[in-house]
Image 1 (cartoon, rainbow, N blue to C red):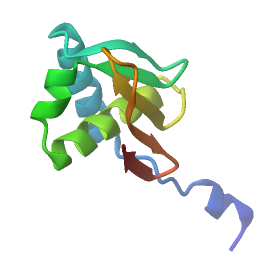
Image 2 (image 1 turned 60 degrees about the vertical axis):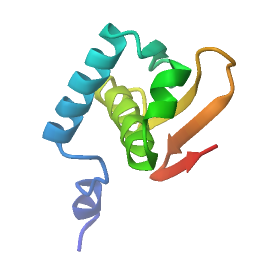
Image 3 (image 1 turned 180 degrees about the vertical axis):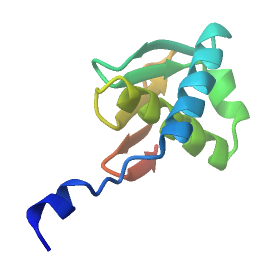
Length: 101
């Protein structure tokens, strides 16, 4: 195997998954459920009631969607999600690792 074979391997999600993530994030931002979303800092604030309404799978899905949206902007595949009310960190995704607080 040559070195170029390794350069083509990617753990990034497929483009269609990234596109769906961007669309879902844009809808949540427009609805006011996500605030202060910035990929330059890889941070997002969510409304507490919205976060509490999500089950564990929904929280993981939202966090991954936000990370995918940042990946689409070439800002890295990571995100820190916090409460828009208290500022407390709610979840993080980085390097394939998801953590809810």
